[in-house]
Length: 293
Image (cartoon, rainbow, N blue to C red; front, side, top):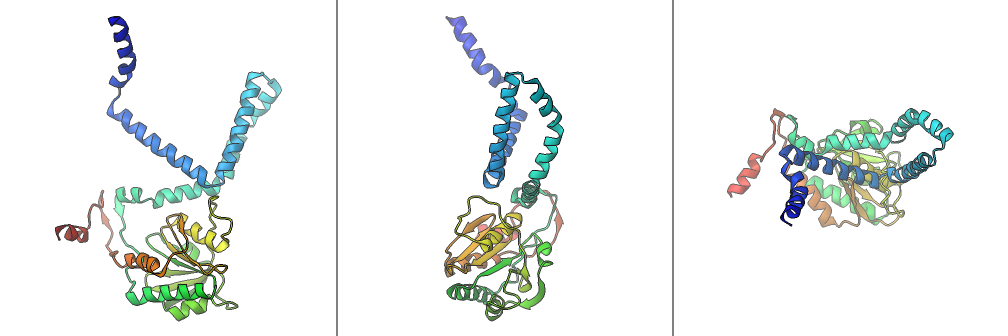
């Protein structure tokens, strides 16, 4: 009996005793990667392609079980071509995943060369009031609008697709830009710091399958730019007049004036720090003063 208990103990605890710190570290990393890959697949059209791939895998297993030689030979010769085809099919999703990895806050916190410049530090209370008033005035008249506020990630790629303005931010100007039948109404306005840099800009559309079918191209564009950058996008619906916010790949619908103002006021708290070489950002002096108080 004692020998049996000892055998069971060795069987259960044996593998645990051989686990080292490196093994635990690897498990954590693999769990993180697998989880994020599954989330990425679920949010994109890759989910449908994955289901198709599972069907193909079942077919290959059946071919192997029943030893269908001719089909096996064809599949083996298509293997290399299939790898290339998968890369081509998933090219947009793979590019977006790499962009998100580069924009990820976790990665930027550990980067050696850290640029802590935040867009929006030029925002004054007057500018915030103008943006809020213009947005809800456009919503009230059911005039579609798309306003993108640049932050750390440069939006020059999308700024170049529009018409340069470099104008002061005022409520009348924003309303006039999106007025129907005007040359600048179609597309997005991009704001950098305290200036309207460009209008009629083209934005990438989101492939997120979870978006409501009732939302149109304007909302998909607003969400799409938030998926590939850290920008804040304000959307006024032409159909309902409701105002939405897109940040970090998430869309918040039917926001109020107070909620929009609160988001924009947070931009005022960001500082324009210079580049410096360091391993970990840590707490800013401003945060330390808050703690001391």
